[in-house]
Image (cartoon, rainbow, N blue to C red; front, side, top):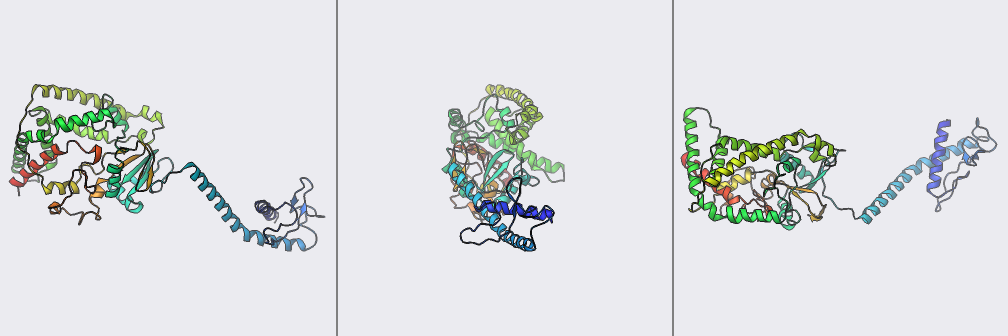
Length: 456
């Protein structure tokens, strides 16, 4: 009983202070509301009313006569009735204080996103399934523009054509640079290529050289004979493999060899002798560039970068690949060729293949250089922005029967891959659109035409 009385006394004091009353034996009247009264004495030590020191009583008694239990009962009822009101009032005042502080500091309106955990942020949502499929499923719940936190790094994912248009057209100037992972930084320590060069004068010079001197339509047409020879070897390889074995032919390796053969032959003017080694380096480079280390997720933890074995392996791969490429360049300087023949037309089958099976399900990330707004949400400086090309290309909002291979959907349609239709951007759009688009398509067109011609 003594503990209950002490608790009620403490609650009485808090409530009396919060509504502006005193600390005496009776409850004050506030704004015309008559509160229950408990007559308590005054403690001799500190001069404050105490439930165990009523006037004329002792610590063993609870007051004079039988009036104190009845008053105590009324006090309990009053406190219980007012506790919810007091709690709601405190919550309201705290919320208003937070709102005032946010308004005074200009708190940004960030996109919605899934719930976060301490330290790791949203990483637990990406465990298990393929990232582009997981991000598509999350966007269906949280909207076409979604904020994730991968460790310490804020990441915004665009999963609709409207959001992609904002990223790659409306805010293209602000979002036209590339963030680098730790492994990508290691690979680019001796000079940035066009893919990961930060936006600026050097990137403009590299792109101008690629588009106007190396990958323009005239140069692409000049390599037609090379593509035809590579396509013929490709078909012969499939034919011989099908005759030698009754098992199904795995085209994955053969298609990779065909692509490498046409690319290297066009660059060097002759077939490259170490094609298998080249394919190995290409596969390893893609794996290293796409590798996320712990130091990428927690950039403030500098010790993780120093201790990372992954970065040391990336440096070793960089030195090995540069030595290999040096031999590649020396051989190229010894052999040059220039051919001038017409380029074949585009094929709707290729466009539908690019839609259904994108080259990269997630377009290369962009980094926000200045604060901007996308779909009404604020994007802080330094935020990584990713376009989920796979989700947009299979969105029923833009495509009929999106999971079905229907090349006829492009017949007579103005939709194309050139970066002006944001529901279909297999090569990206804006300043960072792939400069090798025409060259790659020319290789694919001839290879596909040869397959369709020679095989059912």
